[in-house]
Length: 94
Image (cartoon, rainbow, N blue to C red):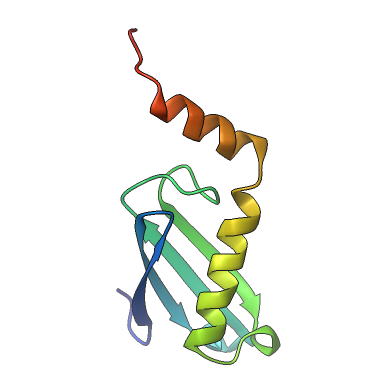
């Protein structure tokens, strides 16, 4: 983890997600948030996502948690995510 970042873990849809964040990233008045998960997420196929959020939109770790969960919940409404979940429940013979 890069210097100056804080980290915590959330569980979303039975997926363990490591959330790293830093306020005022490179003195730009933006929060830098990184999501890391061993499984695919609706916001990333690789399990990694880097997000930049204006500093005025977030104030603390609780706000970051709410932001991340809202982003995941919103992205999980997509047809692509629904299709992925359906396909991952099916046995693949080929």
